Structures are given as structure tokens and as C-alpha cells.
Image (cartoon, rainbow, N blue to C red; front, side, top):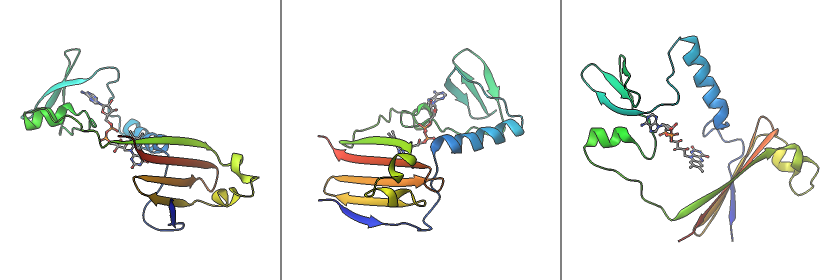
Length: 148
Ligand SMILES: Cc1cc2nc3c(=O)[nH]c(=O)nc-3n(C[C@H](O)[C@H](O)[C@H](O)COP(=O)(O)OP(=O)(O)OC[C@H]3O[C@@H](n4cnc5c(N)ncnc54)[C@H](O)[C@@H]3O)c2cc1C
């Protein structure tokens, strides 16, 4: 049985949609006139210049190289000098994201969209996170289950 531990109105952090954070970042990148190289990938780097080499052969020189290439990071491999493959935790995460309007007339769910909330329900090998964004306009549901 899952237990609710509501952290509504907590000041633990800021909750937002990933797309909105991307927009803030990309807007600032554009304002600063920093060039973006889309549709290619980094295949190597020179830590002395410093520069990165793209798959199409271009070398891009900068002030600093920051590797932020995720779970299958090539940077980690290049820096560490060995493969650091991801390992499965055995958990799967199911996600849903929908307009708050879908819940507002449901007597059981309306309280989820009256204001921004973050609710966490924790059970054995499972948890559910429910959050509301933009003062009830958007709802996120995240369920994690052990699958192996
Ligand atoms: C289903 C799911 C749900 C999640 N939910 C949440 C959540 O609710 N809250 C939370 O905080 N976290 C969540 N996470 C985790 C979060 O997404 C990651 O921790 C976060 O995205 C990691 O950021 P990152 O910048 O390290 O890597 P990423 O976001 O993976 O970004 C890496 C980027 O590098 C690019 N890249 C990779 N290799 C190269 C290369 N050789 N050359 C050029 N580009 C390259 C990739 O295309 C990608 O765009 C979730 C993850 C998943 C999979």
C-alpha cells in the first residue's frame, strides 16, 4: 500500500517543465551570441587548446570544454580512459503530463489543481510523484516500479 507524504508548499526547490528550462537556457545562449552546432556529435577533444572535434571534421575552439553528454557519455570515457557503461537499476518509470483542466471538475482530484503541489507516495519497490505546475494549469504524474 502506498503512503502519502505530502510536501505541498514546501520550499525544497523549484519545479518546472524541462521544456521551459530548455527555453530559458537557449534564450540566454542566443542573447550572448554563442553559436550552436546541431545535427552533429562530439567525437574527441584537445584539452590543451581547448577544443572539441565534431563528427563532420570541424574543430571548435573555446575558453572551456564542459562535457554534459548524459548517461552514455563519451566525455566520461575519454577522460577516464575506459568504458563506463550504464547499469540497469531494475526500475522502470512511467510518465504522464496533461492539462490541469482534465481534473478540475472531478471531486476526487480537483484539490490537485487548486494550486501548485508536490505529492510523493512511497511503497515497497514503488513510488509515485504527482506535481502541479503553473498554478494548476499542468499536471505531471511519475510512477516508478521494480520490473526485474
Ligand atoms: C524517463 C525519465 C524521467 C526523468 N524524470 C526526471 C525528473 O522528473 N526530475 C529530474 O530531476 N530528473 C529526471 N530524470 C533524469 C534527468 O533527465 C537526467 O538526470 C538529466 O537529463 C541528466 O542531464 P545531463 O545533462 O547529464 O544529460 P542529458 O539530459 O541526457 O543530456 C545529454 C545531451 O548530450 C547529447 N550528447 C550525447 N552524446 C553526445 C556527443 N557525443 N556529442 C554531442 N552531444 C551528445 C545528448 O543528445 C543529450 O542532448 C529523468 C530521466 C528519465 C529518462
